[in-house]
Image 1 (spheres, one colour):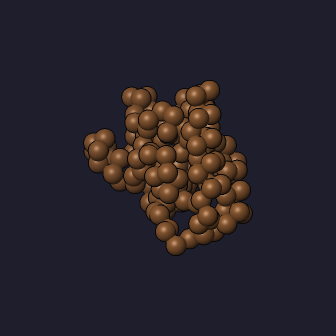
Image 2 (cartoon, helix red, strand yellow; image 1 turned 90 degrees about the vertical axis):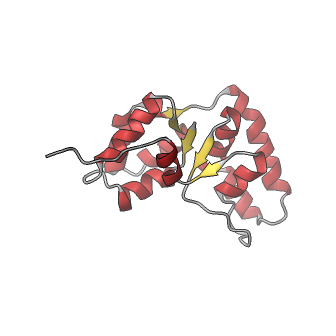
Image 3 (tube, one colour; image 1 turned 45 degrees about the horizontal axis):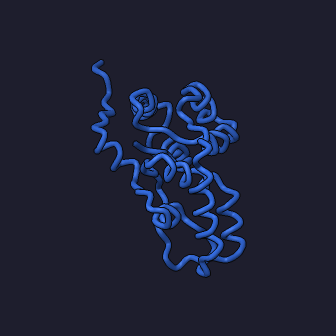
Length: 164
């Protein structure tokens, strides 16, 4: 099962799966959610719906069940991630504060708590001191991470145009 980062939704809407010309992607997301395979988290919902654009409207119409609320058991992964970020001397103090205040922190912790894979466009930046990236946080707590295209292939998604 998968938890989708906000950058998946935002990049899809803004670049390659526009709501106006690629409805199959958006329909697949909702269908995959109903099948219990693909979700996101409420922190991502807040970020997406705060944009005030057509993606915000899509998110509201997709249904609240697309976004998982944190369970009480997420406290352990949140603590583990916070300890990792704070004791890791690679990152600046501002990078740690930014990460711990972000949706990314919650996203990775919830994926860890649920045993899900995080879907993101982010890639590790081993030389960066100014930003904690999702794949690095995932690795710190043993959460798998992948791209949206890996999910589409693994899940057998078919984004086909209906016959005219």
